[in-house]
Length: 130
Image 1: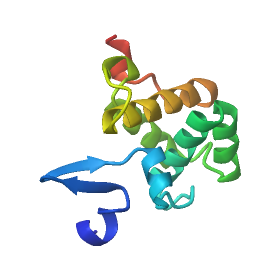
Image 2 (image 1 turned 90 degrees about the horizontal axis):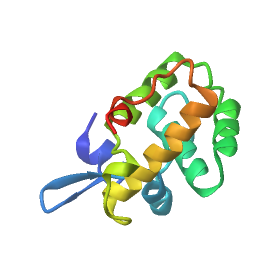
Image 3 (image 1 turned 60 degrees about the horizontal axis):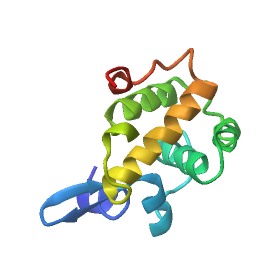
Image 4 (image 1 turned 180 degrees about the vertical axis):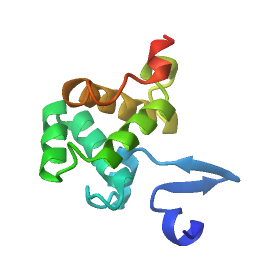
């Protein structure tokens, strides 16, 4: 994987030497969110997060059903992993900026986990600490 070719300006940007990962809304705004498929699970996670943020959790679940990801082991592992690294909304003090967007994705994906994957994907560890 080539950083400049495969990642930069697709899922992240570099500002003043810092790498800033984009949330679902930023990737959609930039037109680089891709399609929710098996080969790029971050796209599927971002599509689900965006649907949950902008519409509702049921729409996010339907999106994953159409993409045939509901029982995909790799997707379930990716969902668990991303929920354990995204900042919990309660820990983010600002309502704008990269952390706020990531926290909003976390909130949408946690609601999706509770609705559709509560048995398969455990609660994120950081939420248990709050």
